[in-house]
Image (cartoon, rainbow, N blue to C red; front, top):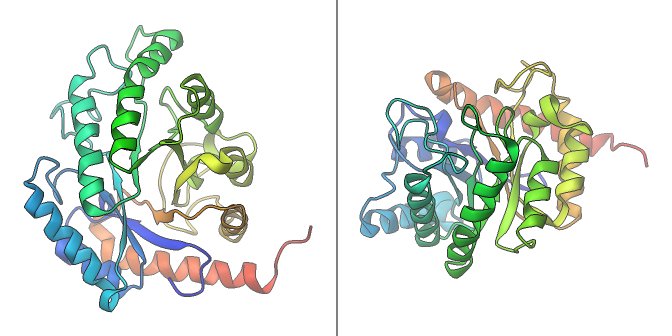
Length: 293
């Protein structure tokens, strides 16, 4: 997106009432550089024939008169694997085999689409599960997924989520170190989450993630609880957040930054345009009045 120091995308989990071709048209018309594709209904069946996935790759490549749209694959579809329990099973559940198969397929889809990154999360610890057991399950299950990602030229990006076992950047970095710091495993940082769970805020979380930063999500949020909001409706200092993102770019971050409004599909056309406008305006503030040393 012209003027911003990074490629800006928008998540399809905020476009759930639009067929995928119409959703992509909205993003292209609003000038977005990328799309974060949540793999699952209503947009792309993860087990779709590879021919369908390649057709989507070609559609993305045609965007912006051939300049194309970059793509990140996200895996947060709520009821894809279990119609009665959101995000179940998770990697920290006793039986995570369906989640592992889904993540392996997500890597393969990402490779077919030319995506660099697949986002994933730990999940919420089941009742009665202690942190050490959840850690052991992640240490047991993630290595094979990381190897599969590396073999397909894709990087996994573990996202800390408020309320999940891996809740903070520090949690993710500890697990990353426990696994031997594999290059094919990075981090997703959601700047809204930083208001709720990160002691050093957005800038501190991005600095801590450092070279392991593989994906960034942007949204507003109250400081009190986990609720994705349009810019201006929460407590995020948007210019300060963009300044921190610009610093991450200067330090070598080359991934996309994607707006995530998963509960605003009902208002998607307005939100797609408004988010782009808000971020451009905030960046002009940063550019015209850069922070001091």
